[in-house]
Length: 397
View (cartoon, rainbow, N blue to C red):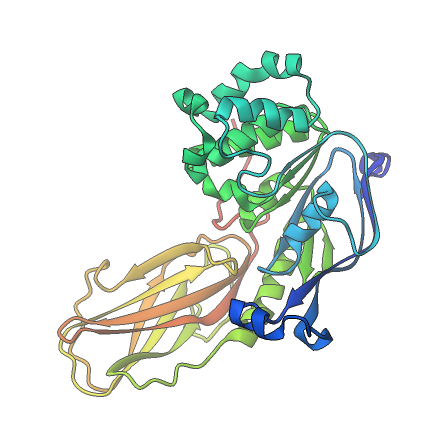
């Protein structure tokens, strides 16, 4: 931590915060009727969404909350925003807060967009004169146009997000809370939102966001907090947090992986990786050559078939894909085991871990099979850039 960040006052403090939810086991109407009047403890269970979390967030920092689905990220954001109260522990915040936690939260479906702007902004602490003064800027940022006077119940999810974000960022918040709702907007609007968040950073505002996009967290955040089963398992720099998240997801996916025991006429049996020297590997340097071997097996002769592969980040974002049809490779008929090698002359991937998937498709006989996350490898280096792709960056005239 730098001296500058150490001198910043805390704007959010969480002390041993736990949030528990009571879950009924009789979810159907029939169950509720049958058990009515005699619901004992055996028909209820307690789910701990956030488990004894202690955090201090300094003013002017941008914090990314990361974790798998169900890890407690959104619940923690709602606790900070005061949307839900902790079961145990204390949450302290200071300053004006604007929250984008759920699609359309704070909007009345029967009111027009214009009326909801005034309603939502007033809930966030603005006077009517302040809202009137900023209304044109809010409308321009949202891009809603003539639909501003239409009831919001007729809005698409993207229009909801546009208007809600536009209101939030024009209320002059000290703390901005952003959940995954921004993923609903189109790419151009997402970039517009990211630029406004970057502007907030420069102005010294505090931003806490939940995102599954590792590149967004690395680009925008000073700090990353990784949650697993409601507990904080990592708290540090954004780049280190993304690496920690990948380790968490790798462990979770390994537990969930199920073998494909179905016998098919043609199958992907396994995936192997080889370095430039032809040796088996699970780690390469940035820009090094990599050969992906897809081992296919056929129970009987298949005359026409194709094989493909893809490389994903642990968050499921595809960074590279190809197949034998795309590269113009004509495969001989297959009748038994057959390896197919794809050689990537220079792997321009950023430092981190990646999964390789493969699939095979019968053309003369309609059948297909895929192997998801068949093998994992790591990329070393890439000190001059971050992200899913690698590039040599230098300073020059």
